[in-house]
Amino acid sequence: MKCQYLIDKFKIINDALDKIKKSSIKDPELFSMLSSYLVVFISGIYEDCIEYLFIQRAGKNEDKELENLIKVLIDRHFRNPRYEKIKELVKALEPKYGNQLESKIDLKSKEGIDSIVSNKDNVAHGKTSNATLNDINIYHDNASKIFEELENILL
Image (cartoon, rainbow, N blue to C red; front, side, top):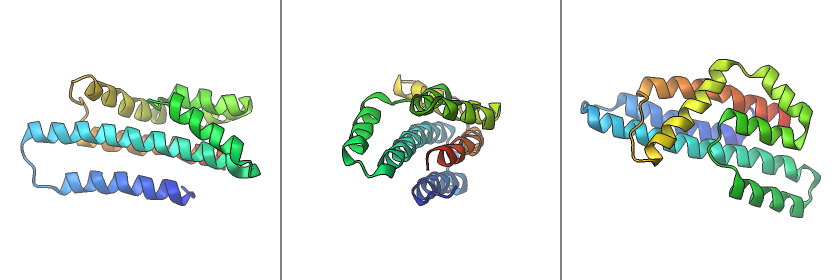
């Protein structure tokens, strides 16, 4: 990643994953709760990063009104950053961007981000995350490729 904002946000995620991995927690129920927290936390950061990238793109022409419109619309309407929703958002900006994203992103990356969001949805509906800490780490590593390509497209 090149964008400092994304680098900082992904560092927060990686630091949280590392802290939990290095912890002395042995209670499986507590570990499951931490995994549930992580998928909610990561999904929220993903939403924030996507919003940031689109706002930066809108700000390229220094049109503050357009930048504000994009911020408000994404804030109100973009939740649960599944791959297809991200692709549709990029495609709404320019159809060729959707094709570019699709051509660069592999199935593992799509499954990674969708697994984070699916597990987050489970937690939001009173269930626990089915993902282990190792699963979450793999999902996150795979999903990060989507953000790298979004940077290439939008910035």
